[in-house]
Amino acid sequence: MSTSPTRREIDEPARKTPLFGDYDVVVLGGGPAGMTAAASAARAGQRTLLIEHYGFLGGMGTAAGVTNFCGLHANVFGDIQQVVHGDADTLLSRMRALGGLSEPHVMFQGKIAAQAYDNAAFKVAADQLVQESGAAVLFHARAVGVIMRSPSEIDALLIETKSGRLAVTARTYIDCSGDGDMAALAGAPFEKGEGGHDMLYPSTMFRVNGVDPVRAGDAWNHFGRWMDEAIAKGRVFPRKTPIIRPQKNPMEWRANVTQLAMPDGSAVDCTNAEQLSWAEMEGRRQIVDFFEFLRSTAPGFENAYILEIAPQVGVRETRRIVGGYQLTEDDVLQCVGFDDSIGVNGWPIEAHVAGDVVFKFPDIPKVRGYNQLPYRMIVPQVVDNLLVAGRCASMTHMGQSAARVSGACFVMGQAAGTAAAQAHSQGVRVRDIDVAVLQRTLQQDGAFLG
Image 1 (cartoon, rainbow, N blue to C red):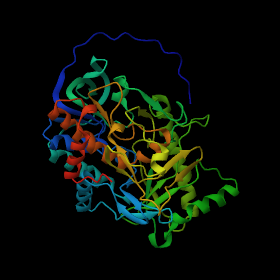
Image 2 (spheres, rainbow, N blue to C red; image 1 turned 120 degrees about the vertical axis):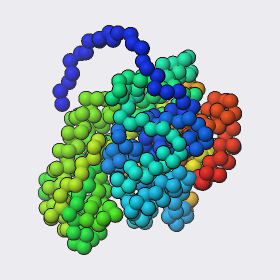
Image 3 (cartoon, helix red, strand yellow; image 1 turned 90 degrees about the vertical axis):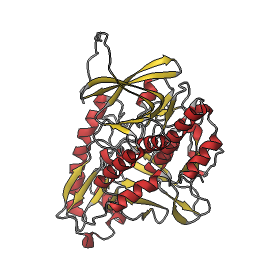
Image 4 (cartoon, rainbow, N blue to C red; image 1 turned 30 degrees about the vertical axis):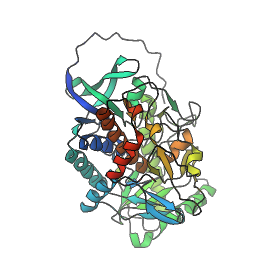
């Protein structure tokens, strides 16, 4: 990877930026958190705009080819149950009607379940969820700046679009960008990784087709052993602990096997344009290399072909805002509860460390298997008319390794949109709402608070 020379600065001329619209709520980012934030705010009567830089919704679930919902379920005293509801139920129902949702599959020797889906079904169902709520959507738009009314209040969000630079204004903003872009631009405190470095490693996902499902059998239970045998013969893999599973069509399998590191071994920082560019090409290189191993080693994969390489790198961790509370590793492993619960997370610690993935589970089946998510974790410090939901919410490095997944993001997003509407109706800052009222509203809308 080349290193850029020291950059000189260019003075941009002053400009008048057209106002695209004035809203009650503006949501940045259309992943699981963003789509539920926009839908819940609009359903509550708020003029809502959802801004997404791709031409479709789903976030990492579609753009990064995850094709697998994690965190919708928890191991509750030995019984695997769906614990994320509300808007998530509506979305799942839509996807099921489109024929694009698999039944949950049990993983890790019966410890937890995940649920595979088809990307196309997720995209269409997400469109339906947001459109039917009454929220407006602006695709192909990226946040590039904010105008502050004061150090604690955002006046306008600046976006770049195919129509040029535009501004949008709102009473409350919700950052669901995944990278905390708007929060960082507004001056909200944030952290990265462990002590400013050592972030979770990203991956590039891919899917293969042409698999013989009969011959492949339960291959997912054997890939680790086959890789160990290859390593003993001198083969090198970017990481251990592969996750390779069939999709709804048993001839199609998804593969989560890559690990994107810089040449010095550190995790790629996906808020760095040069590092992100390096990662995109490195991910495709690793995929081709692993696919050769797959075809030559795994029964049933001899005639398989690469169906799709995800449109972008799968980002696990970048900025995490510092809010009223940071969810911790102990909170996850001890299944901690909070008085200001907005929902639950049932996914374990999933730490993507150098060369491997380390899972840590609560003491199941002796415990309820999920932790509650406090409202305070989506309320940033300093900025009063901003909420932050999704993987950039307020969590420690290890706490985020669990609650960054789609299930928890659905929870945080629905709570954020509902809270914004409540703040407007009560005439208070989002940090000052009556949380008991928020909890009752969420439960009335089908959410499970644990």
